[in-house]
Image: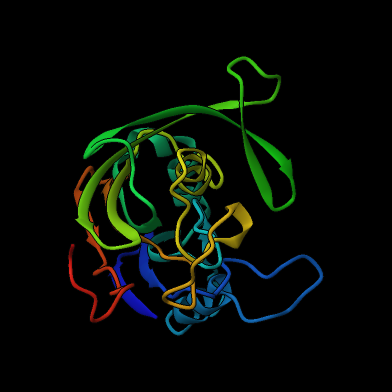
Amino acid sequence: MTFLYEDKDIIAVDKPAGLPVIAPEGSRSRNLLDLVSRHIQRHNPKGRAAVVHRLDRDTSGVLVFATNARAKTALMGNWQELATRRCYVALVEGSPPAEDGLLDSWLLELGPSRVGQVAAGTPGALRALTHYRVLERYERHCLLELELDTGRRHQIRVQLAAIGCPVAGDATYGARTDPAGRLCLHASRLELEHPFSGQRLVLESQPPKFLPGRRQR
C-alpha cells in the first residue's frame, strides 16, 4: 500500500485490489481501515482512520480517509461538492456504442452484493451518471476512461454491463473473461477540495496493465 497524501485531517492511499476497505461483519480479516489506523497510531496512539467513501474490495486505486471526527463530518457531509473530479480506468469486454458518451440510468440495490438497473422512478432507485471515453481497442476488449457525476454503489460495473460491456473479471455482472485475475477497474484520479484549507488536491494512481503484451487493434 502506498500513501499518496497526508496531513492532520486527511490521508489518501493507493488501495491494492483484493483488500477490503473494512472487514466483513463478524470478521477480523485484514482490511485497509485497520492498516491506515495503525499508520496514524505511530504518531497518535489513540488515533483512528474514518471511512468517508469506498471502493469495492477488488477495485484498486485512490482512496481517502479522514483522520479525525471533524474531518469525517466535513468530508461526508459535502462529498459531492468537495470531490470535484473522480476518474477510473476499466478494461471491458466488447465495445461501447460510441467513442465517448454518457451513461444515464437508475440503479437499485437488490441485495447485499448486487445492484440492478431499473426504470426511472422505481421506488428506492437512484439516478447514476457516468461519462466514458475509449482509450484503446483490443481484439476482445476496450480500455475505457470513466468519470463519475454521481457515486452510486457498483455504478460503473452495472452501467457497463447494461450496455453489453461488463468489466473484465466481473463475473457478478456477466463478464466471461478474466485476463488479469482480478476485477479490471481502477480509481485513477481524484480531485478534492480540502474541507478546511480549500486547497485543491490532485490525487493520482497509475493504472495497472490489465492486458500486458497485447497490441492495439
